[in-house]
Amino acid sequence: MNELLTRRTDRPLPPGVHAKLRAELLEAIVREPVRRPRRILAPALAAASVLVVVAGLVVAVRAFKTDSAPPATGPAKTRTLTADETATLRTQCLAEANRITGKSLPHPFTDYKVVRAFEFTGVKDPKVVSTWLIGSGVERIPMPKGLPPQTSPGFWLCSRTAGGVISESSIRFGTGARLSGDPMMRIARNAGVYTKPVARVTVQPKGQAPVEALLQDGFWFAPTVGRTNWGPYDSDDTGQNDFVVRGYDANGTLIVTDRGIDPTAAPVTCPVVVVTLPNGKLDTVPKTPTPPECREYRWPS
Image 1: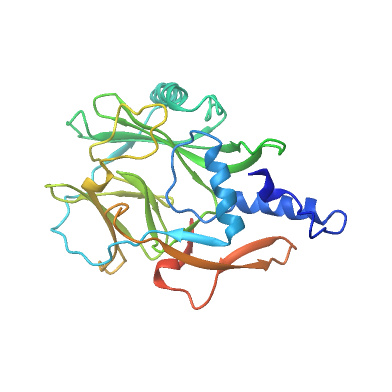
Image 2 (image 1 turned 135 degrees about the horizontal axis):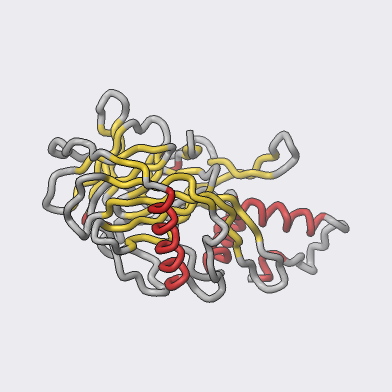
């Protein structure tokens, strides 16, 4: 991995240029367009980001675009947690995040500040996620040996079922991220992010009617069955495909459907070009003309 960031002897660079390029590459890693976030587990995630940026390619997954659905149930009411309830939930979330996170990233969210904590009222099923915590802070990204750790501002999400069990404790999403392919994306089976033109989101559990999601500051949340009992090195939710997520525009037109990652679909390669921003820094943008699967949306919009 270090070879990716090391100057090649057959093409020496002028003094100082290699250090500048390496710094720009590391910064690009933090701003990498978001595809399918995973829980923070090990430095391998950062290493994978290096490969994506160096290759100059964005790998997306084909989504299912056409769909129809029965009417959704009405939106659930919510209430803001009290200060004591928020503190209790935060303690639970931190304990679970520490339990399942790799030793290379101990106590990943200790310094995050709570932005909001709320509960869907009236949820009776103990397996359904009813409570969410949103935190804001700085993620410290381990780097290959010889390189200093990098930092990136982001959000931390944690959920709890009506039965009092933490469902997802280590969801994170970076600020200023870019969504490729669709203006909506899942970051859990019952939560995700959206940009314009999405104005409404529903989540349909298998064999049930769709459930109306709450849209809040670029995030969406739905009171549906969560996933509990995460293992220390689990990175995917095997039951995510049992939930169909639909996004509608302001006119009520279905514009995007997400059934999760289709393992049979061929990956889409999206070429990008490197541009110089007005401040002199480098950035990547999709190469034009841009296929529908490669469109990018700034989040939040």
